[in-house]
Length: 145
Length: 145
Image 1: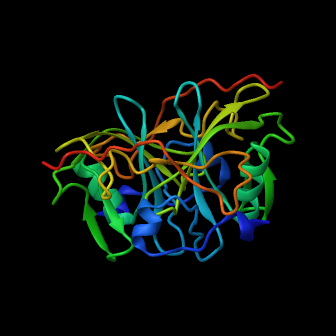
Image 2 (image 1 turned 90 degrees about the vertical axis):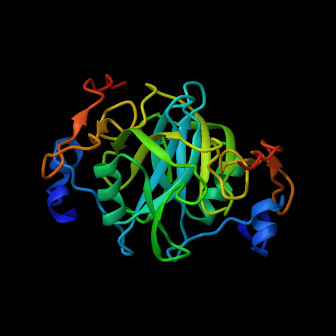
């Protein structure tokens, strides 16, 4: 399945300017995924897919990741209800990263910690603190369903 | 410099809920970076920083990446003029990814191929094509400065 969905990596021009989808997986067989909210455009999470997760996501239209901590396929929202329906999917110039724009189900949250999105803390640019001290951009966790 | 800017990785609660910045670098000493346009919110690129690049970015407020292909620090825009001034910087729950919102200098472009942003091709969800065929979301390259 995955083999036929993904083309062979051609030369630089084919990868960058061509229309054959030939994603590059890293030495662990993974490709980084940037997930944004399809309506607001907000960055929700950064995660990983292997070939099987990427194939399932393209074929089903619902985001399936690879959990590095558990070492298994991870259909986002299967237990939490926070399913991600893919509205659009893109790849970048080198075809070594994927962007998915999603509509989030359940209570609309994404982060397992309880915040709406994973990027709830700011690193102050130019900070003189050592170590740098994070500031919370989100302070309220979502109510559980 | 980098050592004092970054704290030690504590336990799960400290990493996820604490305010000490303790980024996790992977087995190659890198952390993935999601770069968006500070005004439009658009995803511009996905790249990497090592500890030195991350420290320089925080200290100078201009994006410095690690070029995996060249194996060296890469101050974005140094030759192209497409400098990235960091407007806001965030980290995620696990502190193993960084989000920077930037203002782009020069001709306003980001991608070395000539498009405004790197994610100029769409992967059609549910496609029956084998291999999947990419569709161009951007068709016009930016004029060179």
